[in-house]
Image (cartoon, rainbow, N blue to C red; front, side, top):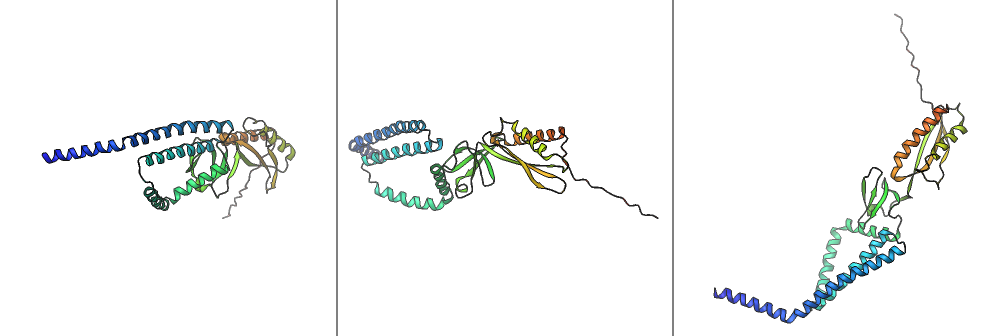
Length: 276
């Protein structure tokens, strides 16, 4: 029992001695850390206001704000550790060794972050643009360091790792996406009339298509049983398929009302009866 009391007394004396010698250093380190967080928050808010005032991209603004914020916090932490009299050299060496091992183990993740940084800096697209990459397309909802999130017309979110974006062919069509379709017209029909009908029907959907890029309608090819007329227009990405289906129906009904024939293959079947 006496030995336990002596052990507790030694620990108590050590704690008292530690706090007597390092109390001011600990208090100073704590104050520095709290000040670091406070200054980082205020400075980050000021940087964010400055970026928004100059109409900087949202993704780039967030990246700059986070870099500034964490930079100040890390700086404050280094000063606080130095205030306690702790030498940082061994820690830096240990962090360097650990970073090397982590880098080898997380090559794929790090490549995503590197690609994300490249996207944020070079800005091949921004939030709100329509992009097509790796056989998928959608509206860019968010750009993060590790991945980019695309939103489809059906409300689906497609997460594309950034390493599959950088180095690939990116089609950026901004707010719209092109629609290309073909309809066959019989050789006996009035081609100019059919083209004008199709063009007028597409233009009637001015709320759903781009007005800056005019729709195109013309003869694509002369097939065996029809003259194929192709039409092209830019539809809003968020209602891409809806617009395409409505315009196709409108074109079909308009051609039918104007007696423009849409031919289809006809096969004649002959039955030969064998005589007994």
